[in-house]
Image (cartoon, rainbow, N blue to C red):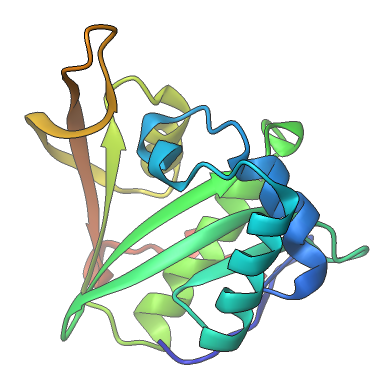
Length: 184
């Protein structure tokens, strides 16, 4: 993915910078959603190293920051699946939930993928117990395409066996993307 910077009314979506390390550590020191458990970070130094790697690699994960202070509040991911399909994901600090930031950021990012990257289809995987991400997908106009039963394991059960997650698939096509969703 090319290096991008997207601005909305309240946010900037940009490549990572070293100053994002503290917020990144706060986000990943105790993930609340199972899919982020493999990314758990135990030290600030480890978070800083990861952020520095992301900064130099210009990875498909971007920092979401408040526009007026450039404070890190979360991440957006865009993974190119094939010529015209992207999977997306988001992860925000809990202090910023319920304020519309995830909707604003994801709307701008989807608009970017459809308009600038010429995506035809965008989809997201969401665990069945992640009600907030399901609600976000629906606010974005994404449709629930189905649920994969016992799809993937991110954590173990108390006995050490894998705990398989039921995972929902939400998607939207460019022709379904209403201009009313665009954030300026």
